[in-house]
Image (cartoon, rainbow, N blue to C red):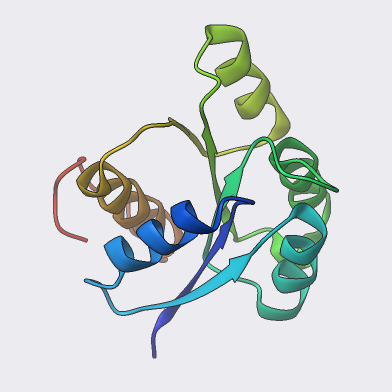
Amino acid sequence: MATTILIADDERSLRRLVSVGLAVGDYRILEARDGEEAWRVLQAERPAVALLDVQMPVRTGLELTEAIRRDDDLAGTRVVLLSAKAQPADVAAGLAAGADRYLTKPFSLAELLAVVRNELAMTAPGMGAVPLGGEA
């Protein structure tokens, strides 16, 4: 069965790029255009990994991350924040909100795939992190 990954970003082109990049794996890709749609998908589908844009309309990626961390049903969801905001304070705020990773835009598809594989390895019982660029 395919592993579910949510991509939530208000930029359609970025959602498409990430979807295409993740098509190399056995993943079921779900998309959301804003934070409210992302929250509905998160609750209904409980994805293994949520790739959340920090600056989305309605609910930001930071707000969603905090909501995920407060929801026992989503406790196993790994959160990767995606943002053009790359200052140390921005990264610290994302991690403080509960994100597992903070990836700055622009990023390469290879880097994103490595991050997703690493986060998925963290969801498997008894598994540890996979080195970036390593196989899951």
